[in-house]
Amino acid sequence: MPHSPEDKKRILTRVRRIRGQTEALERALDSGEPCIAILQQIAAVRGAANGLMAEMMEIHLKDELVAGETSEDQRALRMAEVGHLIRSYLK
Image (cartoon, rainbow, N blue to C red):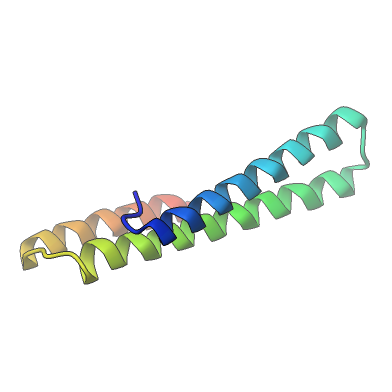
C-alpha cells in the first residue's frame, strides 16, 4: 500500500482509469464492435495495467528499500520478494 497520500491518489487514479477502460471494453463486446476495436481496447487495458504495475513497484521500492528504516537482511529479503514478483509478472 502506498504510504504517502500523493502516491495513493496517483495509484487510485490509475485504477479508476483502468476500470473505465474495462467498462468500455465490456460495452464494445456487448454492442458487437469490430474485432480490431476490441483488440485495441484490450491493448489499452494491458498498457494501463503495466503502467500501474510499474508505478506500484516504484512506490514499493522507494517506500520499503530507500526510505524505510530496514536492516541489510530485511532489504535482502524484500529484494528477493520483489525479484520473485517481477519474474511471475513477466511470465
